[in-house]
Amino acid sequence: MNNSQITSALVPVSTDSSAGAALRQAIAAHLARYTGQTRSHTESDLRAFLNWCGERGLDPLTAHPLHIELYVRWMQETRSYKPATISRRLSVVMGFYRTAVIDGVLAASPADHVRRPHVPPESPTLGLSHLQFEAMLQAARNSANINDFALVAMVGLLGLRIFEACGASIDDLREEHGHRVLKVRGKGGKVILTPLPPAVQRAIERAVDQREDGPILRNRQGGRMDRHAATRRLHHLAEDAGINLPRMHPHMLRHAFVTTMLDAGVDLRDVQIAARHADPRTTMRYARARKNLDRHPNYILAAYMASGT
Image (cartoon, rainbow, N blue to C red; front, side, top):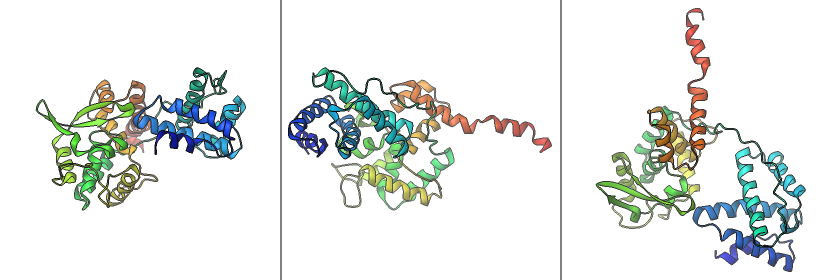
């Protein structure tokens, strides 16, 4: 889908032709500021807001602060989204209106003074424990699907985001200064080289299966694996590993990548660099979530009082 098709698809059907043209221009101007996955994610979150407006017959360019507040309330009460999701989507809406003001489409942004929901400092995702992570690796290693071990290794042992793992190609594998590395295209189009430990090299070689080009991870049809197929594979592996979780998703492996590094004694700053967190507070959220349970003082008290219980 090209840029004009994307922009047209985002415009609510209830918007008349003249207003629709102005809205299409505003959307195109905003999305043009982003590239790669950041653009895709921004488009997705902006689409959610525009759909909400379309369902209510509201032209987004005539919205008032009350409408933005109602959108936030709808996400909280009707959709039951988590605070982090609401905050992210609200940030996209704010950015869209900020662009419209900069470009002279609007005189003022209706989202400027809308209150953001409080996002707790702790990560809401506990991820996998060390033993669960080992069980996932073992199940993936024993799987008949040659992509499974590479998938778990790339997300859990390299800390790749799921779109980075699925987007990796055989051409991205190379030698640098005596190291076997993978070129990773991350958020905002940033490209980094991440070294491959021997276990990860073996997992990737198994998935590549002597091919010379194409994606590293493939689906059952032989095409590039996407995040939905990856999530399904992880569900199957969790079942094979005997891991009973209400909702298994790829980020739990990346979460385990961070917490297992911390458990292994890696310095917090080095973990932040490995995880490519722009803000150290993001890494601290994982650290706090890990300590809340694993190092909870209840265990210390119970051990201290063991003689009397």
